Length: 142
Length: 383
Image (cartoon, rainbow over all chains, first blue to last red; front, side, top):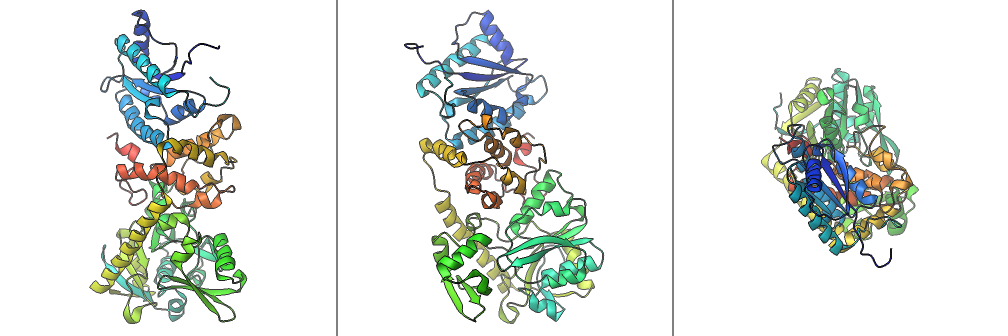
């Protein structure tokens, strides 16, 4: 599609109870957000294995977002604490790998925070548009 | 009776064992005594292949243990497989011991009945590289070598014609030979994680060369030593201040040298070039899975997450197999160097893994394989 602006591919892992609800609310509240997002619903942010994130990058994601309930609000007691521990570790790995830190982000979004969700996606998309396509993106994938 | 924390000088009572051993045959005698008195049902000993290589085998014959004394070359190996489900005693370098302890933390092996005698280690040499070094640097046929020695920082090889040739270790390592790369910057030279920490550092005066410095690290080490003394296999005496000071001095000198090498081998790569560097290094990978097979801390077994990504379709830009392994091992990598040794396409796997593991472990002040109390750091942080 010549002439059209490059649109990044952003993979967001959303937990079923909070951030997925947040994405829903964003839609219901008609908050404008870019079409760059691909949501993967997981039951809890504690389900997200660092491996999933790396695999997303290798499959062509320009950015990966890890989202979940606010700390203390997890429906499975401490799933988001587990996600946080893994995220901190994962962040170091991604930095050491040489990927820009903006390509991996963590945010806690509750089901009622539709506007926060939309703003978050908008911000990330703007950041990634500046950075350009991910260096790990395979050839032939745009 | 010895106590925990005692620092002793000891040697084997049997003169034959004492002479054959590299420094008094204490370790050989302790292992033999444990087997003789039924403390264990087997002992891991080294079986000599040639001047440059020896492999660990398990034996239940006391005579075979006694005959196995003496210094031999063995690169680190996965000793845990010998210990699973058996009551055994084994000697090990610091990295061997760390591997076993990391496995024990992950329930790969039960250390209740396993006795580990640690040996001081300043680094090991790869058999293939050593042969090449003899041809290129020493200009000696590797088959002619009958003995070797380290003296005043020089590595001396003796040939069967009675000739000797010495080259300084620094010079050898400068040329890319000598100790394996990861040994040069290894941070654990005295195996304080084992049950007994033995070695010849700190043995001075008339005992030099015919006694072993031995530190009792825990209850199991005390049992081992008491048993050997009772059986009359060894004699010990307390080490004096001077011995202890010299042992510490050798250790800190080694560690200081290690730090220098670390700076040289793990050079900082610029942010922008890092990803290209890793992609280029891993591009050679043929997915043979050998690095996983030899890894002493990997506990996944046959079906593991990393080997699910052996298909080329999963490795567009970079090997997913290695990425999963990096995630899995950054908390437990001990830097033993076996993955680099075994790699058929010569990817510097250990160096790459240390680049990831070093900062992560340092940040959490976690040294893998040093004790059984501290859980892997990802588990610890949750509590």
